Amino acid sequence: MIEFGKEFLPLQNPPASKRNIQVETCPLDNDRAQIRAMLTDTRVDFEDPGVVHVVHCIVINLTIEQSNRTIIAAEFAIPRMAVENLCEKLPKSADALIGVAVGSGFGQKIKELYEGTNSCFHLYTLLQAIIPYLPQVYSWNKIFPMIDNDLPTQALPIAMEKIRKASSNSCHAWAAENGGITKDFKDEKYEYVLERIAPKAAKRWTVFKKDREEKS
Image (cartoon, rainbow, N blue to C red; front, side, top):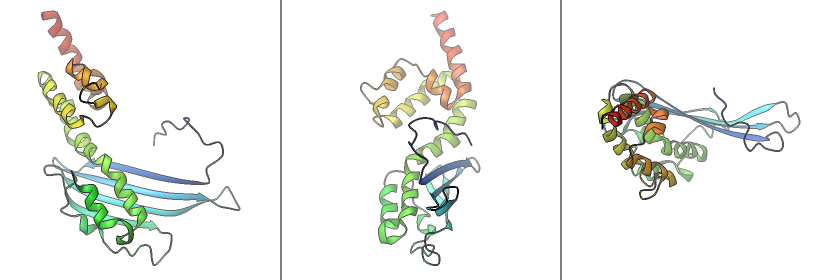
């Protein structure tokens, strides 16, 4: 695993506890994608700092049908729980997520199902952590590979305009009126975004723009 940014803003002393949330995704076929998320809480032993204990470990596995953004399979696993024979007996299973759309309203739905006494605080925390990543599942498994491999270069402005509309006002860079990326997209400056999401398309677009400028 790449440990990026480890050197920035470090703690002054070795950590006494650590929470790690990892979210992964993979394509299963042309329409289905899988999301796996894991939350792990660890703490250093109070008497021996060389010993680390796992306090909680919770895993979620979701299968998404991308054409309608719906969960078609869901599982929870609790490899390590704080209180054995109690914490793993969740009031609501992952089956309650099957058929739920992962678009607008998903946050409210998991709040109804798993917040507070309905379930487990750490499971709910992990489900909440998945929400900002859900749009990326569709993008990284379907949209961006299509742009990189199959989309004709002259159609790139259409695709990038769809990305701009989907991202509009999501952060300062995508502010609809004066966001830095928004301004660049209006001027067809797509290269630096394409380099991150579709590097082959970025090269094609650079050549295409150069040829177009030379002919004009």
